[in-house]
Image (tube, rainbow, N blue to C red):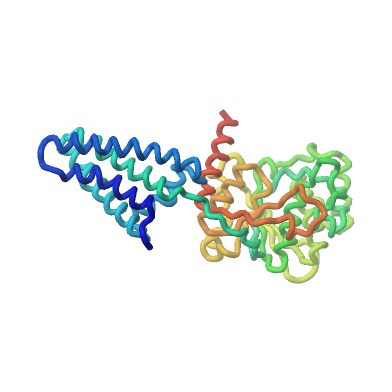
Length: 378
């Protein structure tokens, strides 16, 4: 492929300081190199700001994704090869030698020259975020989801129609209040044909849910629902409410559920064939991203490496940082991520669930979310 106008300009700009560097062996060569590098640096700064107005990606993201490939030698063009050679020469020979020999002018010129290479490359590339058609959300064997504090109404959910739950019907919602367990119901419904296991990340505050947080009428509804089903009512409010929901889910899906509680207990709910397994994963504090990541790795273990393509991280529920933790693991292990649009009602799960395309450019957004959370704490 021929060189474009920008490619030619880039090569010319970078050859000017290079020519002065090898112009002579006199003592003035360092100052000549510094002046030519400074001139190219000024031009590169101006061209960078011109390109930044048109580019989708900032310099920081460009350095961490595309430019690093040049340093590693992942070049695919003549210009890329030239840049790689120049960078190698600067970083391994010119800069170290000028520093060791105490040549201040040459050192400053080399630093300006290196920065110019980066800025001019940005100008030539004008990095764009890859625009691609959104990939279809694939049904997978494993689903990972975080559980928000279960403040849903028992009478609406447990007493609701299965189709209404599957479609997030407006009948379920009290004015502006959304039933925050419905996204999980919809996600399970979508993946059901291939789904084998669901991992539920649960925080300490959710596990320690007290009956006092529920209205007396809500507790009575849950207890009556369980007793009618012939199920013993547990002392834990969290267990009771989740057990009632899973019984409803089993009834609607026609699949029995094996649940592994956070305390090690195992329990079977519902009847039918093709057991659907749920594992409650204690994730500690949802405001501690590293604690959440450790919980994910411990629970999924080798499954992440062995069957990463069969894992979907649902980042709908829970707090922002646990969603960030799941998104990071999805990127690292090349898993699928999804989100349930909770504001959409009376539609099939296929219309309310969508795939979240995560890539290296998403890391900056994830870090911004972490920074916001930390700022709220300070």
